[in-house]
Length: 336
Image 1 (cartoon, helix red, strand yellow):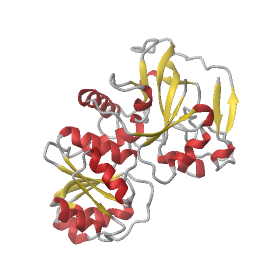
Image 2 (cartoon, helix red, strand yellow):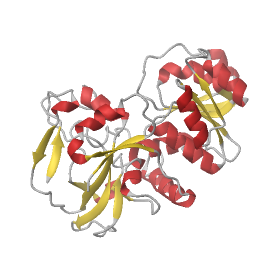
Image 3 (cartoon, one colour):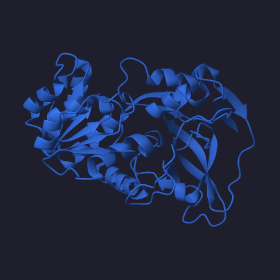
């Protein structure tokens, strides 16, 4: 089979190496997936650049989110059968409830090879059925982006019909959050840097948007537009917490998950205490959350937004595509 290798000293996707190795054989408690689609996440850019997610001297098969069908099953790998359509679970060992003390960074980081290959072998407990309404390309976007959005919206103080939520930008988590929130009957607002993307979000169901470049105090502008939101899905990072708090209604929550900007600014303690606001860190989700997400996606016939499909043999170009101007939705690598 073919697979892509990120050499230990490489920090440029152009240096990915296409390798050929024997097709792996699943052992006890394992299944083999014939890979059909692999989606990219911003964390993959961080792993590429290092040192995040890299071990010195170790070559790595990159990327973490895979969809395909099981084509071989090892002993004691119930309940899976050949032909089952599946995706991976990002975190191994988080079934439900509180996250484990050490979650790791998922596949394609540190000492765990990823999924940028024609076949991958995974523990049976690390796979989840694909929603019946999705093809492999759509399903490949669930393990990180959609599950993180699900946790942000429903993992604590869940949204209900009539709730209001603010999404930031138009990345994969934000688009998933918009779709999931609209399906439950919540109202969604957005903060964006381009009017064109704001208009695109409105077409997807957002009530309105604020251009954060035109409105430096965009949190207050969102509050004025929405009357205050019950939840902010912070896909940027802790740097925007002051504005996120300004956008919140009393008793609201900021679910912060972004890795784009981790340079914290001083919080407005009066806003935090006066609004009795909650701040919650979010990192993907549990197996139980993923199962609930699959059911919800099927019930509401949600289809993730795909910006670009790239052939497996052109996989290095997917890194550039993910950071290109005008991106709206997920970049997915496909295998015939």
